Length: 288
Image (cartoon, rainbow, N blue to C red; front, side, top):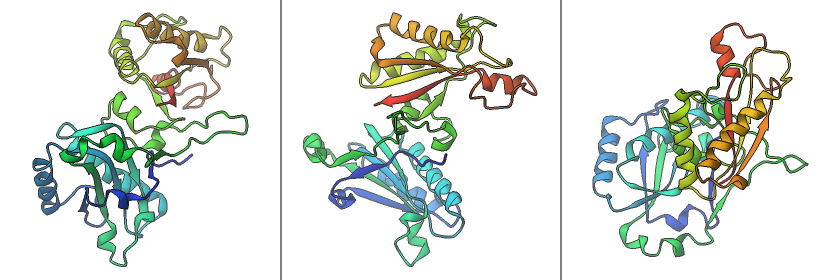
């Protein structure tokens, strides 16, 4: 399933923030700014150290396929994000908006190849809650007739390169799946290996930092035709035990075991790399 970055919808349109946005333009088929526009971005960052970023939007011209343009605009968002990250304050509910060719409004193709940063200036920060109240509405998650969230594969979110878990969660919406590849278990058991510590600590950190975050921990196994011992569920439960033991409230964590029903590669796997991809722990974002 193809999904663009999480969308931020402003009830009164972006015009409500027209006095507080800046736009940068890209060369055709490029997701990195040229020297002139990059210098413009650097200058803007230096003169806006006290501002706070709300969102980043990007668009393309109409040359190329729709899928290609969606990916290109996502890369443009990612490029700008990497430049401002750590340089300016960014709202915890920061969103990215990938418009693809849908953002092409001008007859001049060059004006459709852009990325826009929406922000609040220092003088507006004192009224930040008032300014945003009632104007921000997050896109509703897609659900089945039974009310279950429809999963969004991590690859379809096109997260910025080298994004950490917190950054991925910030950019996610309910239904997004995020793989935690470093969480590994001893063979034929639900005992977590010591090498998993960094990934477990990162998950603990975001669960503690974002108290409204609810997740579903999903376990998957490899290399067999059936999960007779229900090992995938027990592994998911074990990760939850670690979180709960570290004061994360249990009601924020749902667990499921999928056995071998959702492999990344066909079983039997051709090599250990494929087996490792099938033998995984994922989290699904339920609520932010």
